[in-house]
Image 1 (cartoon, rainbow, N blue to C red):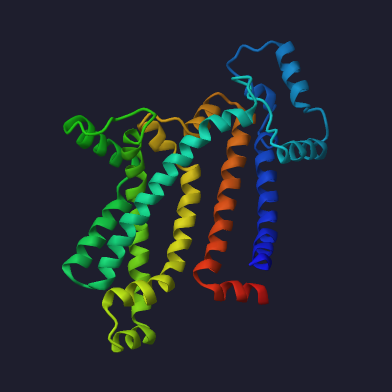
Image 2: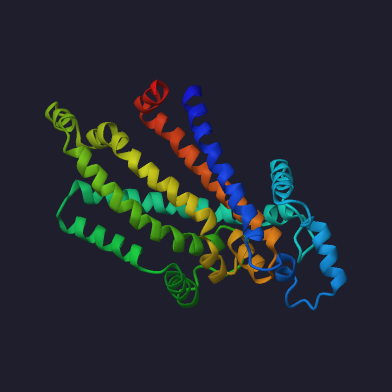
Length: 311
């Protein structure tokens, strides 16, 4: 396991390096003077422009600026927000827990609903249950998240009065935004679970297990589930990575704090240090999630770990 983890970390490091280059280039590849872009619309005086340029040390060579940016980023110093004058890492630390909470709840809904729909469809292929499950999945994939969110607000908040529509705090305010994201991803999980289970259930060892008289539940849970989960774990990991960086619309619709709204605010304010920090943290979260997915493969199927060690 340790060797396998080392190999995956070695593959992740170049990705992290590439992310740091892209994040650094966000400011330095802008046309014109980035300091004037940051201060546009603020009626900045020449003294303020000179002060910000000195603060960001843009007179140094690009290589020196990148080395300084990388050195500071390694210790958690992502600069200071131009708009709020607070350290970027503090701004992110205030918003990240809300996004993590939303992402965790959404992925839980996606996995629960997707697994149930996918397994039911696979166990009764071409039946009305299969068609209904895939119809629900198709609807989840096709419906935009902002539209689904508005429908859920209308139904469960305005009409039924069961749940609060917007705001922060408490599990009741988390259900609607998490369902808005989770139901869309549940459709993807359901379709993949169905195809993966159908492939596994067609293997010879499944027929052998049934011929031995094992109950269908034992065949599905003991023999089919583990082998069918590997591609499912992949898509769950990818979707979780997307969730960490893709909650902008839902956080806006439901008036929630989070990384998505922080990114929008940073863009509108032309707060490039904050934009850099949000992009870097989101990208690193994506890399970390994919690393955890790789490790989970070796837990679900130890043969992957052994093949990785042999390689």
